[in-house]
Image 1 (tube, rainbow, N blue to C red):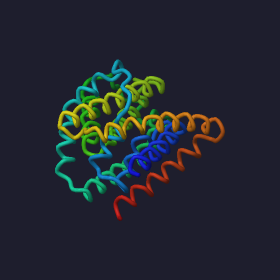
Image 2 (cartoon, rainbow, N blue to C red):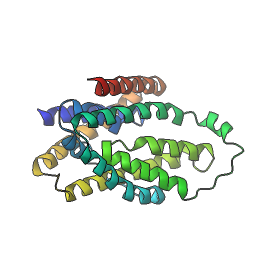
Image 3 (spheres, rainbow, N blue to C red):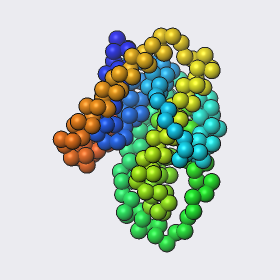
Image 4 (tube, one colour):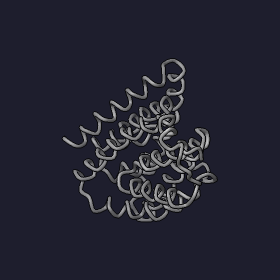
Length: 238
């Protein structure tokens, strides 16, 4: 039943991602701790495809250091504390996701700022995302903030941000699976569940893209943000 519920959750999360362009990790990690252990959630929900790191070398360097630290924090938390941590990160995400879509307003804020694409910010963003990826398997908030800033300062355009995020988050998940496998937390049962969940993910993305063609994305985005907020409060207060 856990495998079935997990596949349904990833299917729903993938539909959301296919329509809104975000939400796969947030929805999956928001729902699955309600019916299975946090350790097994970390394996099943993060078995992803790695694409490329060409546009995200700098954040990945920070990630390499941050993710093991996050996993150490995760191993110190009990089940209730993990749920609270996931709830808090979900609330942070629902604040940053709308902010990330206000690039025109932010461009006006940063129009007099001269920032070149250096090393400090991407390293901090990658490190912070790695810590969150290790601790609660939701690496998005630091990268959303970093990507929004890069677009607002005209260092990136929307296409480059999307490509960088795809490469970075794919790398996060591959690295996380490798580390937890090295720690001995990947067993045959969880590996099988992860393989079973992949078709649900692919089908969900396909359905999401089809729905995206029929309904306004802006309306759906706000529905997703509202549902993630409710999900966060459920994790925090149940």
